[in-house]
Image 1 (cartoon, rainbow, N blue to C red):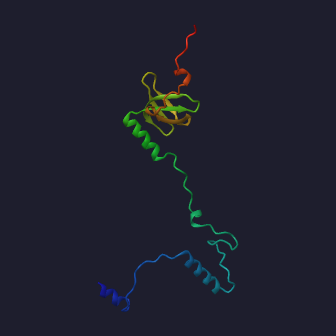
Image 2 (cartoon, rainbow, N blue to C red; image 1 turned 180 degrees about the vertical axis):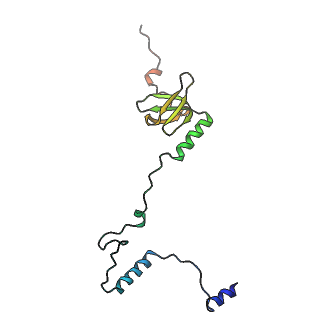
Image 3 (cartoon, rainbow, N blue to C red; image 1 turned 180 degrees about the horizontal axis):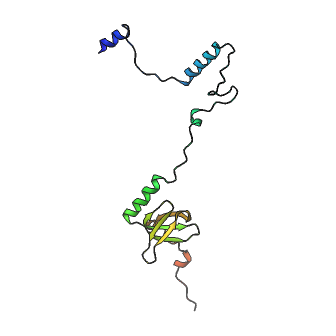
Length: 153
């Protein structure tokens, strides 16, 4: 097989490695083509931009993709808490706290199962933040409350 390629290309060994051209090479070739033209300017046809106007880069030519509406981290977190039946605390924008387990989630809502109260469907836009009920900080107590009270005589 190697002998076939040797004779096919006139007895010389050919380097068949593909080489990607650099931007500097492309610009150099463009400058050489412009120098060979009689007036030294580029053609102003339908497919090419006019001289003096900035040329859009390839990144600008492609349409920009909008950011995703849901992240995989959020979905993973909800699934993990649903499967483990983890007691969660939802703090709403107005400061109200709802404790329960997440039964299911949607793009815009969470269904919360509560033990001593009816189940709730909470819209995500009203949730300020969520944390596990086990991570709740104990209530702060004042030093004065722990001191023994002096009785009046």
